[in-house]
Image 1 (cartoon, rainbow, N blue to C red):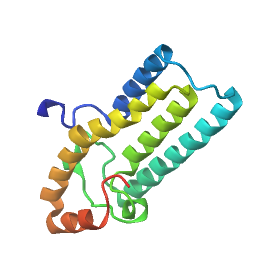
Image 2 (image 1 turned 60 degrees about the vertical axis):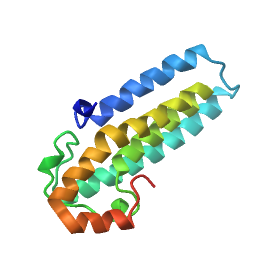
Image 3 (image 1 turned 30 degrees about the vertical axis):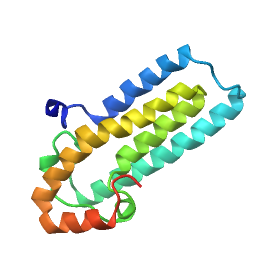
Length: 153
């Protein structure tokens, strides 16, 4: 299964999982929550996810390093400040939070499988391969960073 490593852009993975969540929600019973409450709660959660992602993108921009998660070997800097002092993967964490917001909107318990599947897929096929490249490229600096900051939260 290593052929899937760093092959599928993470936003595409999130979109596919969001579609699967919608599909699953159609076949299960939904939790009875007023649409206004669902929209407000889902919107708030999604905004938090967007903010986390935005902080990560901004930090990469300030460091002038690549945002392309499929070509991690082109990374020119190891970003460890800002939100990266709290999570090593803020963009993926933000996508996970957005998927949680989608699950809130869907109000279907089965849809919660989506964010879990995203975390598992991203960890195995995106993050672990990225970590190998970063460890080789930034050696002890990266290893020190991994000892201080968790992969997700």
